[in-house]
Image 1 (tube, rainbow, N blue to C red):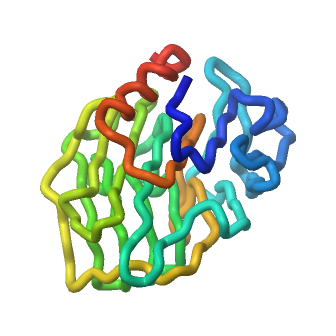
Image 2 (cartoon, rainbow, N blue to C red):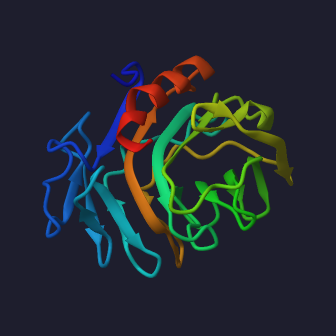
Length: 230
């Protein structure tokens, strides 16, 4: 089984507690708290297969969780620690721009495949003030990969980590301006969308933790689920 300690969100296309197995389904549920559901918007779709997945068309499909209690940005002086884990299969790296986002256009966390094809996480306190991390490895297209982002909430960019298929994949951490912690306001979670840019490819499951997983725990989760994908 995947690590349970600190798990606050689990969305799984192969779990009937999360998603009704039908291409006509319009909702998916957080199995940790099934009162929290996400709407499958426009051309995003649940897709049967080995494994079942959520398919995003790259033009206007995404999943929107309107409940704002999934994740808290912090108390204004320190950020909340977190880990984000997911299996993804991009059709086109150049268009698989975003996997997850919280926040407004100026104050947000987002996690994406950047223009060069490697992973990127950015924590924005304003338009020009952010800390983040780039990955080193170009993500393969049309191949399943496990991606994990962890952050300990310290405000130190060097404590943001990226893992690819259970292995640390950090390039040098990045910073711009003077980063300050997020305000104590949660924002809806969007999956597959960043502003007007959309994911093109598949996302099968997502786990969110309220703490930073260790490298050993990241590898444990990779081994727990890799039988579905590799």
